[in-house]
Length: 340
Ligand SMILES: [Zn+2]
Image (cartoon, rainbow, N blue to C red; front, side, top):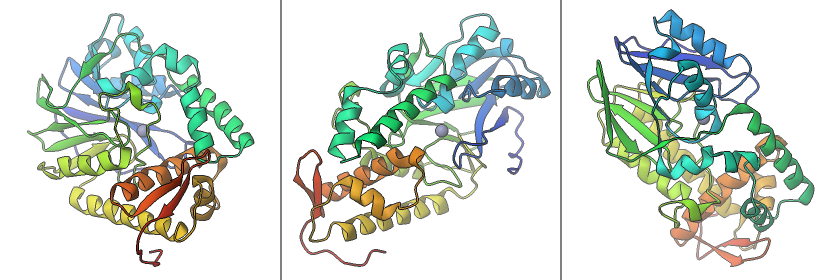
């Protein structure tokens, strides 16, 4: 059970338990305004989730028909999955906003293909993943189709956009990293930051490497480099509480940010240690750094290592010695052998 969210007149948290989905603990949806209301995220289409939201909305005096606007923090299924069903229940079109760099993830075409493409396959070869592991990953990826409905009409939003309603004023802060279109929403009156999956109290969010870079406004996008720049963006805000997409609220944002930075530095040192004086593919690094990882999370591990390698290459501390497949990586110059 997670602690109750601090009470505000015009902000309510709808907290959905998500048992069986790693360490997410809960998926959080936020309801803003005193009516009509704005929803921030809509949760995954897990069995029972829709009914749970309906019940919690009723508990704070609202129904789906009171929703006038939906804002999605990013385009992952656990954040947009129920949007279509909620709009259907409202009985009329509700404007739904999402950053332009994540809209393609919510389309029927992408979801129909089971979140899979030739580019993903090519990447798994580059990483040196065994063929049977790739097959299982493909099947698992297709399974996620069950937890969302595609979105037909989404209004692109950008950093700096504002949304207001009775009792709140939101400013969009584009914080790419967890996904290219990830956004936080800042409410200056209460000094609350709705942080999506950019910062989460009990998890260091994975800056998931982006394979489909040609679809982005910046095709040179690199997830961890963007993520670190996005941490700086929220560091500049006066935040009393951060309300994230999963788990408990955060009341010490600076402390959390420094823990994240330590984690990234330590991971970089571990990776460098593994490629000191030896050329290695990403799949070997996964075995060394995550020996007990469940198969369902292998892609996240590959992605985490790749994102850190991109930073190490940018910093001149590592290089790609063979472009493969599989690609081989090696530390460059004099490195500390301390794995941290
Ligand atoms: Zn999430």
